[in-house]
Image 1 (cartoon, rainbow, N blue to C red):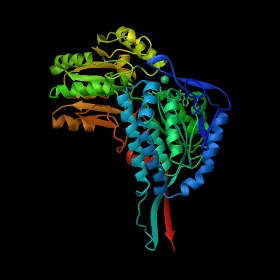
Image 2 (image 1 turned 180 degrees about the vertical axis):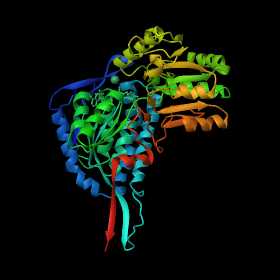
Image 3 (image 1 turned 60 degrees about the vertical axis):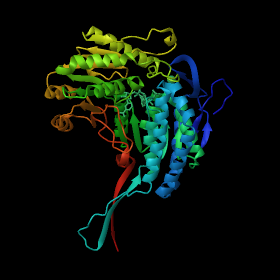
Image 4 (image 1 turned 120 degrees about the horizontal axis):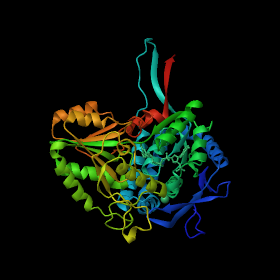
Length: 488
Ligand code: NAP
Ligand code: MG
């Protein structure tokens, strides 16, 4: 980091060194709560920089993969402690770069440390099976080997957790890494790199190149020196990355969008359901891939649920996430703000009824940021755009149903299948939901947006490349299985 300007300038991290881009260009990372505030500058890199990073990662590969897993794990334990020591600093950068509240940012940073520790432990856990051979004199078993150099492309909505839940398993299983963070959150990622540097990772084991998705992201997808690509982000970009990776035979993993439903049955605990709908749908300004978007409510309790929901939403304080008492921050950037407002207009045009919100927050305090009021629509039908496309903003669509069967049918009427939740006290409805809901994550009497780092995470249908990450599932992507047959 250089502090010659008013806001710090961060460099690329390549081969253990902080290096400016060959382009000589930098890009400002802006605060969405205060449009004119520059949080920091990051490098606007070129393919030359990416090539250098891939070379550094390739050079570091052999020595890194030859270390014992426990030794690789020790580096992650160190990085976890360093991240924890810098928790407030990292969380501040996160809130300022992408707008989530400081409380949420601190929670995410603490989770980042937990992710590092979880995977540090993986360095000592089994990696294969012994399989009885038909030859009684032979020993047959599986082991796992790293892919080599792994490219990681991440979004801005979880700028600590997502990079770490990809980097930590990549590293502990013996891969070396080149990461390109979202342009929105290059400063936060630079702080993660500082933790890895301070933890003493050998040069080249982790490298970061910032820059545009169309140059550096695309470059990673197409780079012949990268053997695996792990991506989280939008569907359109994910698919293009998958195609580029497939074309050159590289392994890839895509985690993409969602259009997550909550079903509120007639026998639900309504207070719990309201709280979870508000938290799942509006926390982080609705910018979670697992955010609740469609709220499918049984007609018998519909009016009561609606009243409780609207009353609860009135209590939400919107503002700069660094301020005490603020519960919901701004949209992460200008484009996101514009997109969400366009979806709200579309909802109105297509005949949905606006119950609250619907616009840019009016108060003077908000003039300088990309704020949007918490917004609720009703009379939403399955064919409306706001019921089909991912909005990624603080917008809930209420839909009324007559039965659990109709609710499930509606819930499954989506291209996406990431997460889903149901509120019910009926065990039969719970079991039916577990069986029939097409989603990678199904949650009962809990919000759609809860993810635990030790459990597999990923979507069905258009939400993912049908792979899973996190927990022990991560080993499937970041290693290749080798079947070994030994005879004396
Ligand atoms: P995005 O536009 O797809 O960007 C994601 C990453 O891809 C960024 O680093 C971006 O770089 C890069 N990128 C952009 N264009 C690229 C290209 N042509 N080739 C290669 N890389 C490219 O998504 P976003 O707007 O940051 O994030 C929001 C989306 O992420 C939502 O759709 C959300 O559902 C999804 N998401 C999914 C999950 C999940 O686990 N399923 C989790 C979080 C978010 P730049 O920033 O430089 O453009
Ligand atoms: Mg920003």
